[in-house]
Image (cartoon, rainbow, N blue to C red):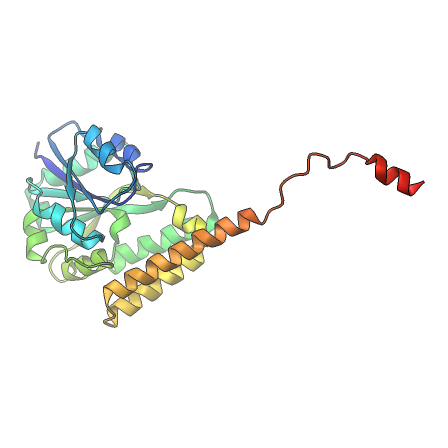
Length: 263
């Protein structure tokens, strides 16, 4: 069985990371586990150490820089790149091992099917749209994971140290050199950003950011816009919750003073 290097970029993922690490523990063969941290202020690094991961500290924040550092330090020929808020299907070891043990697959890249936690109808429609985009346009994004041979990654130019759009940047370069295929299993991503702003708003924001990136706008400015919109949505959600009046424990009780005025 060929060994595997897993690369996970992190930033304040102490809640999500343990779940992904538990999923990865299902791999029964040799694995190099690399967590590349972008300056977490929570317990992310401690969680990674406790799981036996090699932890690298990225000098700059941003997935592009983190993934570039992680892939450069990967020892094995096959790399599996995952976001920290992902959950793997229990059958993932069988699907991945089948791919990496076939030498013919080294010339292709592989991704999981996009799945978002939650039961809203709009999420199911989003998943179908992503499936069509991934299959027909060969445009899977980072939250679908990426299984790729080192030689193909190097041939495509590797991850660039971009503040945003590092996944789309790599996929577009891969499109001219290799076919991107599906592993046939879902990779479930956290639904937090979709629930905070709403599916349509997030999808529209992401589409606008991709359009601006293709037009040549600075990824640093796009990353700032992305973070600003995320902070705005969390603030709005907090304010909405704070605006709900607290329940009155005396509600429904008759006031003796009010009764006296009524008499």
